[in-house]
Image: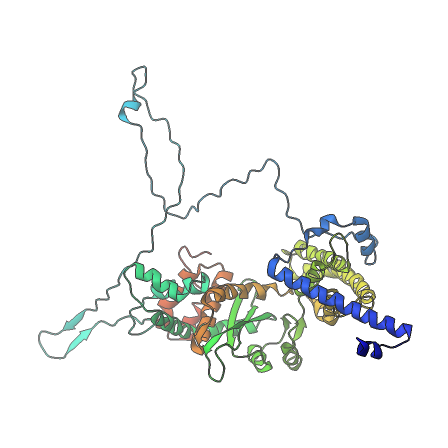
Length: 507
């Protein structure tokens, strides 16, 4: 205690400065503790806190006037209420499903009226139940006819077996499609599929299932290459990445991180979602992903994109969803019943998104014009408020971090107003990578690099099929049946999602 007393300055101003620094540090540490508690015990939703209903409205409006005298802070977009006379009801069962008619009749005695006359049928009441028959498993027997000439000994000729997705394997295109869809669409790990097959008397080790998926992923590489070329030729691209664990990766420990990247792009009528496995998050991976691309690139604020974008003349866009997320965190640590700067920022961002909802179905030119008329003035007011708020906020706190993020990324965040085909956020990429994240929670890791690469290809084909309104199983089956027979690039192009015709294949 005496040692601490000796090092304290005697001047009052210096003591006040020390107290202020400590108070700021304590406030930051308390925020960190509150955020960690919320992460562990609170809701993971990014919706604005319910405390909005308890705010002193006058206080919030007064703060919002810093942005605009007539801008009232909008609460989070409310779900439109259902009209009072509209009942929710049960959705009808799909018309395309086969119907099995089951007739229910009166007993013979009940068909006689109490007056003695025979009752006549005047109609019927129908109700529907959804029924399910477990998956039908069958064995395809390929009988290849053998021919020989009875007059000479020229030898025997046998009919050829059609090209198969995996030569010399007993896995049909239908089985491969089923396994791939169950794992990459339904997030069902191979060990569970092994158990399900076993209940039907089919014993296929998961190692065999894994080997089939690797070979299936390698088979579709020509399609992936075509999709990649078409995607990179379009002027707008979204990218995101997440971690994946690969146990047997040369030169790396089993517990080390690798990455699954996603690229989303292509024309609006033919959206393309491609996954790419890499052992790192370094710039050379970004260079490989963006090789040959020039246009608009929308990402989070990961710095790994910056150098590659600058070298290739790529225009970068920021993500307003990320910016909003920072203010949501700041809002969560704000005292209840007290409005703060985070609420003002969230309110203003909500207005930017309201404009996007309004123009969602319009043409690119119309979207551009409305953004110039409505979004730019809002952004100018937000920038003015941001500059004033930065100097009055502790940098290390949640609010300070949110404000600094907004300031640092401002230029990228406003690029979307320059072209009607651009998005306000990177949600297309984040939504595309979500099925992989869900699947990872179930299957946990990839055993080999080959498995991770094949998984990336299969995720790519399934997610692109879904984006083009195709049912994944039906599309994969078509690809696995036809791709082994392809002899030229035209045959492969015919299997692109927008070129195929599937019976009952709408998603």
